[in-house]
Every structure is written in structure tokens, then in C-alpha cells.
Image (cartoon, one colour):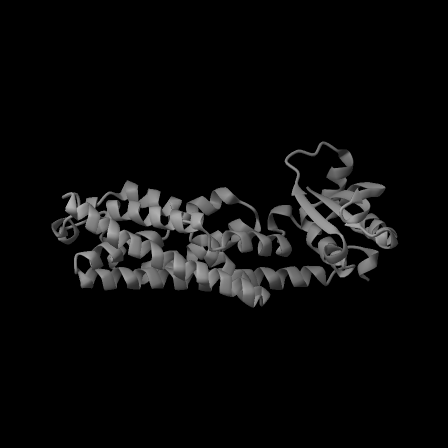
Length: 315
């Protein structure tokens, strides 16, 4: 269940109340006239089943409440109510399959914003992966994948393409390209510094590396894994399964490939640098392609579902 809180101008309160009352999957309607002071208006609250929330939110936005008032949605971790159970039963489908498109757009906007923290995580993840590359240490590679924040901009690109949101698409693309560029430049400098201390050397990079050689040797399986990870990552975002997203983050070698390319470039090992770059581009392409197609399929399925009205107001 989700908790929906709406600040509405008094002249639209009756419409909001009627919409919530007649929508399938709602419960616990509360109306507080004049309770809101900024912006001024009435406060209307209800709980709604996740699978019915997207249509209700869309209808509320059609009343321009996002401009003249406010629409806030919170996830309820616990709701002990027989009425809430009936609301979930009345709403068609399963909550885990429901997509809140406004929530997805807001989440990807936040995760794809170019910031100092984002750049720091990208750089630190790439440096950790650089250590894993030189030491042929798979544990460090996995750790670097988990730290890397690159899936946020990737999801933002997919969402921007499907939602036809050019600003989100541009912001996400800028964050992705800038993040990898800065991280790789920083890692080249990190590699030079480590070589001055005698901790990195070209021999370690050129030696047989059974645990990490796949990073600069792209093949068909690299693309297949990237596609599968793109699908899983997108589903984890739309269903709010963040634990799944962590698993996706450690399944695709975007950060390690960037790290290997940076270290190899620093030691003039251009063959490895090019192979790692190919691996990086292949994985990014696979994730974006799979994520976009997944969102398109979900959007199509959701549109078909919404052709069957959930409430008398939709007829």
C-alpha cells in the first residue's frame, strides 16, 4: 500500500474526494479542510494499492494539483487494516508488477544528476577496480562494481527515451559520459602515482590474469550478460526492489573495464586499453538497449491494462 497526501485548492476538494472515493484500491480517506498553509488549501489523504496508484496520480495531475497544490506519495511498510486488504484485493494485478511512472521519472532524475558525490563514487570505484586488475583479484573487482553508481544515469537514459523527456535524457547522458571520463582520467593519475611507489608495474598488467582477463576480451557473452542485467536492473527500479539492483551492479563489468582501460593507457598497453574500451561500450549499449525495450514493454502492458477503467470516473 501507498499513502497519498494531496494539498488541493478548496474549489477542487470535492473533485479530489470524489475521485478517491470512486477509485478502486483506495482506503482510509481523510479530509482536513483548511489544514494546509503553504500552499493554502485543504488536505486530503488516502491509502491506495500500488497497482491502482498510477491511474489515480495521473487523474490528480489532470486537475493541475501538481501546479496549484501538491501530490505526495509514501510507501507504507506496515498497514494493519481489513479495509486496506479489501482495497488490495479489489485492485487488479499485483503490486510488485505495477509501475509508478512519475516515481520512476523522479528517481532516475535524482540518480542521474551530475554531482560531486557521484563523481567521487565513480572515481573511487574505478580506482578500486584498478587495484583488482593489477592484482588479478576478483574480490576487488566485485567490490568496485557494487560501489559504482553508473546504473542511475543508464536508467535515466532509458526512461528519457521511453518517456520522451529530452531534459532527462540529456542530463543522464552528460552524467554518464562525464562520470566515466573523469573517473578514467583520475585512475590514470592514480596508476602513475602507484607506479612511483612501486605498487603498480607494467609486468603485472601484462602477466596472465585468469581472474580478470575477461575485462579486456569482449565476446558475445559480454553482450548477452549486459542485456540480461539491463532487463533485471530496469525491473528492479520499476518494482522498487533495490536488493536486486545491487546484484545487477556486480554482474556487468562497466567500472572494471573503464579501470583496465585507464591503467593500460597509463602503461602504454594500447591493445588492452582498446579491448577494455570495447568491453565498456558493448556493456553500456546492451544495458541501454535492454532497459529501453523493457520499459517499452511495461508501458505497452500498462496502457492495455488502463484501457479497462478502474473507476466510474474513468468511463
